[in-house]
Length: 398
Image 1: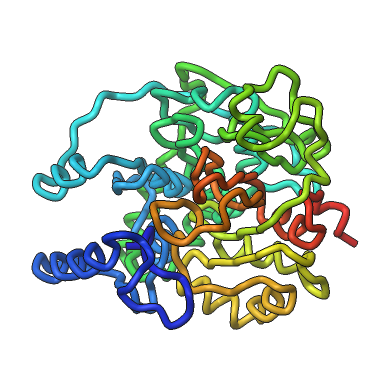
Image 2: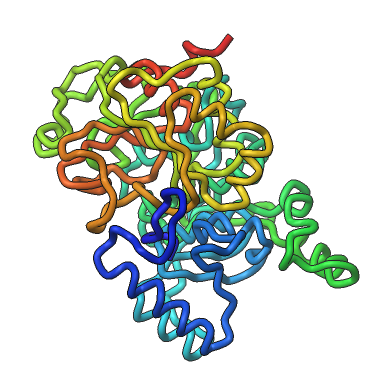
């Protein structure tokens, strides 16, 4: 339901998605009949599944968690084995409580160094995919490790693991630590009292043994990474924001995106800006974007939207006045949901629009017919919305 629900104010079961209303009402009816808890359209905990599961403490370290969405790997940030499945596999799992799969290979990606100012977890994962290709993690469970990852907060780790699927990995995981345990404490479905004591003892054991051998290893120096932006039609088509479209780029990608080899990416005019999705719609994402937007205005002619990842995130942002900052800057402030992360016959931008987006995919038509999508961090989206073109957020910082 998170994929098809309307995110405009005053929403109900009606949606622009063909067949969406029937899907919502039938899901509701089936969940009630089966006695399954449903976070419904008007539920105060409604939101994108990969956002609300962590914030409610449904995912826990050591869990095996599946959902019929490829970005389920987001929840590997908690040391869970979480991956996306198809609808037939979901049916099998619901019916039997089990799922059969082949054991994947292992790949450790170690990030060293300290993230430069203005660089985020989104830039880490885009750098990895750009360097090693969209198929670089195929057939592997990827463990993200190293001092850079350890320094990330939980919401940043979720962003990192979220796009393991764009790396073709089965899933991505981060070993749980004290940040993980503290983040989960007090969450509705997390263990409490003596159960928490027992859980902590187990959770603390969930780490890679010293000297463990992986099927493959990748090492990346985070010190030299800058804000990343995609230039083509795959997440691997990404470069640092100061760079130029590479020579020898696929002709089809260049034709679709409307750029040329050697063209500088920064300064490319945009028509729209979107902040949202299971990748970058949590409170910390909105705070960072709002810090750049405060006291500034979206460029004339740019359509800008912000869609919080859950109703909890929305309420928390409004309690801090972030909604006011977004609206005063010229962003539309929405209800929670997947919204314009993808298009399946529902809401979209005008055909041919060039969009800077905090989402995870820039495939042809991903956000609508002939929409040209550039994926980046919320900071790059905010800075670009203000400039009216792809812009470096570091130039707006004091």
